[in-house]
Each structure stands twice: as C-alpha cells, then as structure tokens.
Image (tube, rainbow, N blue to C red):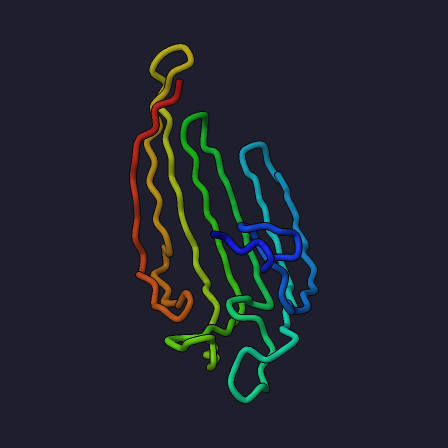
Amino acid sequence: GIDFTADPFGRFIGYRNTGGGLARGVELSVDASPGAQLDLKTSYTYTNSDQRTSPVAGGDFFKSFGISEHMLTLTAAQRIGRRLNLVFDLFAAGEYAAPLFTAGGSRAFLFDGPVKADLVVSYTVPLSEGKSLRLYGKVENVFGRAYFEDGFRTPGAWGIAGLAFGF
C-alpha cells in the first residue's frame, strides 16, 4: 500500500517542501501603440535566485540552476492593411548555470544566455461571411545565432509554415 505518513498532510501526490532557496527580483514592462497599425511590447526581468546550500561539490556556488539574472523581451507587431501581419519577437537572457552529465548536480557549468529573434508573417484570405483562411510562416532564430539550452547547442534558423481555417 501507499505510505501516507511520509507527508505531514497525508497526501500521496503533489509537492513536498524542502530547504528551498531565496528568490528576489523585479519585472518591468511597457506596452505601446505608437500608431494604429503598430503594437510594441517590451519587458525586463531581474532575478536573484540563490540556494541556501550549495548544489555543487566544494560548496562555494549558491546560484540556482537554469535561471538567468537578466532577461529581456521585445515584440513588434505590424499590421499592413487588413490581411497582412508581421511580428518580430526578440528574447535575450544573461548567463546561467547548469549541471551536465552529473548525478545530483555535483558540478556547475556556466553558459551564455540565448539571444534569439523570431519572425512571423501571416496573410488572411476571407472566404465568406465569418470564414477565412490564414496562411502563415515562422522563422525561429531568424539570424541563425548559436546558443545553448541546458548545455545543448540549439539549431540555427529553422521555420514552419501552415494554414488555419477560421469559422
């Protein structure tokens, strides 16, 4: 059977609190529409996330794994006429630490954070009253910039295309 005594509340699923860490930060964002056809959004996040005990051998490193101190986003959405939309999306983050190929995170490796831009284009064709067909394409990492996620190199620029039927 299930041992309900392991959890002070008798739960057999969910989360159990442990030693945890300290997290502090600030997030700032701005939304603007400088013209009827242009929307701009940007945000900046600062995060100071430390562990109470060091997750690495030697005990001299207290940063939380996978968390960048600085992150920035910028999105520009431009409507051209009633049918064509262009969206540029930029994401940038500072360096982060990650445990690689180790049991229990006994070593930390520092990686430069990603700087990645995406571009989306969509065109809507009206079919009849209340029905439309939207053709779209997206290029991820449009500038082909090399970066790592959790220590693994990501692909260069790549894209998708599709159709969406609206009714």
